[in-house]
Amino acid sequence: MHKTLVTGGAGFIGSNLIEYLLQHTSDHIYNLDKLTYAADLDFAHGFKHDRLTFIKGDICDAAFIKELFEKHQFDKVYHLAAESHVDNSIENPQVFVETNVNGTFNLLHAAYQLWMDQPHILKPKYHTTLPRFLHISTDEVYGSLQDDGFFTETTPYAPSSPYSASKAASDHLVMSYVHTYGFPAVITNCSNNYGPRQHDEKLIPVVIRKALSGVSIPIYGDGKNVRDWLYVTDHCQALYTVLENAAIGENYNVGGKNEIKNIDIAHQICTMLDQLQPRDDGQPYASQITYVKDRPGHDYRYAIDPSKIEEELNWQPQETFASGIKKTVAWYLKKYNS
Image 1: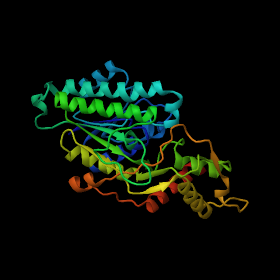
Image 2 (image 1 turned 60 degrees about the horizontal axis):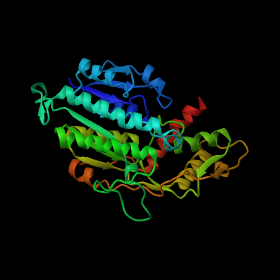
Image 3 (image 1 turned 180 degrees about the horizontal axis):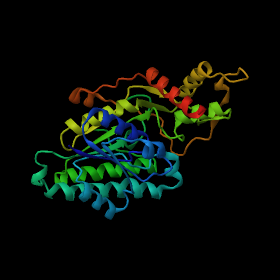
């Protein structure tokens, strides 16, 4: 039985990934999470499975991470633990460097020491299990697009926020271990995820929560910033596919082919809520939309070309935005009405 570590497994993508792995593998899953404000405590403490072990800990603690790898002998790592909210990175960039860069280094080096005798030489016990380290990153490392073009795996990095800069740095660190040590790592860069368990600070939960609360729904700037939306379960399937099948040192962009302006997202959700849970006064939820001062350095457009993962690994998203947002709104209605 493989021993699979998921860092940040009580977070949005991590918790969905763990459920996916428990359904589709026979691995024993170890959920390592610091339980910051962004964690889903119900998932961390309330979700039980005989192949799931929860470990509270901080990836920034190098001694703890080294001891953890030595104790449990992980042979697969899905590294998702990260500070990820751009607004927070603008207010407090230091913690993003500490977690996203230094924390990634601690995991890389602990795995290297466990799996390898020396550069490019795996320890004999790992010749058959073929360990893998999957570093999950973001399309924000590429910067911003104008109205045309797409991010590909060869797009030059041009991060524009402390968050995206810290993720770019961690990407480069992972690839340095691949090239210097022959370390068995791969990287994915994904577009905006949405779906169940996303933290309340993110756009889609914000729109739903503010609408139901009867307060202003804040939209940055003119609302015309474009994002490519990927349903979280499709992302989890892509992560599993990459870790199991990708060659060492490969990187794959994972996108949903759903480019939508932020303001259009807000209007779509408001229209759905008008039908599912109308306001008592009969007014449309869209009347609550309010434009607020734009975020500093706000990237205009992200758009991913996922051709490489589609062609090489035969991955395709299963959800359209119409089907995914329907499931998402239903989940949040249940959460906010409970």
